[in-house]
Amino acid sequence: MKSTEELQGQDRPECKVNEMDSEIKEEIPVHEEFILCCGVETQVLKCGPWTDLINNQSGTRPKLLIFIIPGNPGFSAMYVPFAKALYSATKRRFPVWIISHAGHALAPRGKKILKSSEDPNAEEIKDIYGVRGQVEHKLAFLRTQVPKEMKLVVIGHSIGSYFSLEILKHAPELPVIRSILLFPTIERMSESPKGRFATPLLCWLRYALYVPCYLLLKPWPEKIKFLAIRMVLQMMDIPREFLCMNMLEPFCLVNAAYLGSQEMREVVKRDDETIKEHLPKLIFYYGATDSWCPKEYYDDMKKDFPEGDIRLCEKKIPHAFVISFFQEMADMVADWLKDDLSKM
Image (tube, rainbow, N blue to C red; front, top):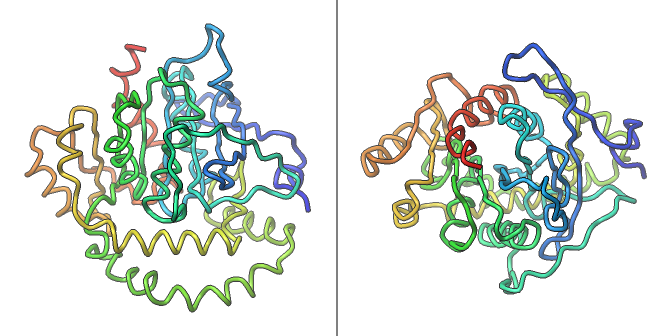
């Protein structure tokens, strides 16, 4: 079975992105790796020329990493256009990496899977595909794949924002200088408009979907999946340098549904203690019409943390910004980071 790259007839995806003036297009390298993190295959997409920060001891090693944690499903390939736009908007000075969620990515047959060194602080993860396990998965990656002294900007989207807060809470030793929470689902998920619809579907009815999911999708040849996904992305006008082959993998879809069920049950009370402790390094960005974290959640945050950097979208950007609004979001994030990055 051929990998996505082989089917596309290329060794490494070479990608194009508009620079901030939206007129000059230059190629930006994006390197794909699969590593074994906490015993689980994990896709990492690395934007920029730096692919191994641990073993790069040269003077050209950057001082900061921009680390993107996706929403659910955690298909990192969907965030590539945003990562490239952000890399370009930050003057190509710092690597931008995207990590998949545990269980949301499977390496194509024949693809080399790199082994990660053991995290000396790691404990056995009993539920790697659940909410707590996903946090431990990200912590293990940061502790083993990023130099201890390297500064971090963590960007979380949707449930990735919850994971970002948990990283600040459980790993205060990590040098996170800024944590940006985009459309943050960090509280009352089951009470949100979409949560009220998703809760019964994810918590009780998902089991009924598992069998047909496997029966319908598992037999599909890789080439058919490739063509189907390419057609869907083309219809939705989504850039497709990396095809999200895991969108049609039953194993990944089942794990995404399981994570979603835990989100509805466990993401309930806002962690005000962690927010208060780390407020100076936090930026919150809420959608004006976001059915996952409605405007009342923004209003409550502004009321409870009036000194915080808490913003409300004025550009009608949807929750799933990575589909059509990645450039606008990248430009805003780069502007927010301007002062931080000027010190690096």
